[in-house]
Image (cartoon, rainbow, N blue to C red):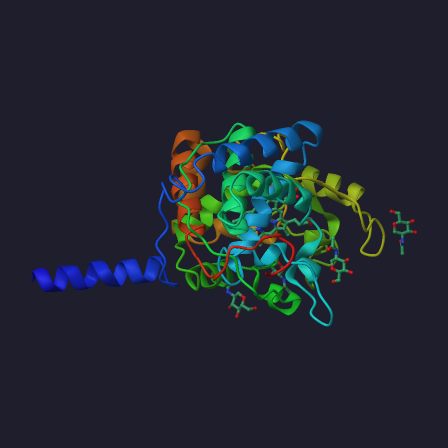
Length: 316
Ligand code: HEM
Ligand SMILES: *[C@@H]1O[C@H](CO)[C@@H](O)[C@H](O)[C@H]1NC(C)=O
Ligand SMILES: *[C@@H]1O[C@H](CO)[C@@H](O)[C@H](O)[C@H]1NC(C)=O
Ligand SMILES: *[C@@H]1O[C@H](CO)[C@@H](O)[C@H](O)[C@H]1NC(C)=O
Ligand SMILES: *[C@@H]1O[C@H](CO)[C@@H](O)[C@H](O)[C@H]1NC(C)=O
């Protein structure tokens, strides 16, 4: 019996840390105790000058973790013939890479060669949420940076057109549950979206409907005025929710009103379990905050790299 229990515990640990190095809260306690507070200061400074920075950092971390684990592969530049993730198709809203560069420089000045870019990005994403008025959580650290980044692999990101089964599959492949899916989608309470990400819902939706009938009519009309046709307004778009610099539970209230932007947001109402969670998070900001924090820790513990990069944009 004891043997079975310890076997299942070690199996669990293997699954959580599939690459074999465990993350811990005090990872840099001896080698770079101020790393996290330095990152926080850099993120704070950048967000003060540009209020689109927090959303950018949160999404950057999500994209990093979903491809090859949270290994800072999203930060690498294309080089020679290799086109990197950041130059792959769903890259439009990936920006503010300079903030991670500045944080890395500040950390390197104090403790060179110690703190991974992947850890810096994971802390910066937490800081981004806190700066937007969202919950704080302690970030486990000890990630390593990867040496591979391929634009072609960005097709593995979930798409805004995904239905609930496609979303479930994308998350479960990474060890994430339906509850993680609903909680993490709450990241869409901050930031901006381009027309291209939701135009399927307002132009030629399907053979019988030009507009997705699950959209609230006046909301659909306003989206159509922002994005009048498929070809025009390449840089046009709209904020994720009316309080798009505030990390709150408005996102879930909007889904229930037919005012979410993406098919993948609306899809959360199409299974009883996820619909129930949407209602729960719409009712209680505290419940959402707790779920979001614990799902972020889970997502950001998908590890993958092998080195501590000197420059976040190039492998050593
Ligand atoms: C469930 C699957 C998801 C899909 C299909 C999805 C899709 C998208 C799309 C299409 C955009 C707009 C891109 C653009 O047009 O510029 C976007 C933006 C964003 N997403 Fe997601 N996303 C998902 C999950 C997540 C998660 C898990 C997070 C973080 C926890 C997140 C955080 C964000 C943020 C913060 C933005 C705004 C970015 C900015 O303003 O720069 N998303 N997402
Ligand atoms: C996004 O990817 C396209 C190619 O798909 C590339 O031309 C463009 O420079 C990239 N944009 C950014 C901001 O990296
Ligand atoms: C979701 O989309 C996939 C691929 O288009 C399709 O096979 C599946 O039946 C769809 N599932 C639901 C629940 O609509
Ligand atoms: C178009 O979408 C609506 C709403 O999802 C659905 O009721 C209708 O059957 C769809 N039509 C076709 C032809 O798929
Ligand atoms: C699409 O919209 C833009 C303005 O947003 C307009 O200039 C252009 O003529 C439109 N194209 C078509 C085909 O309607």
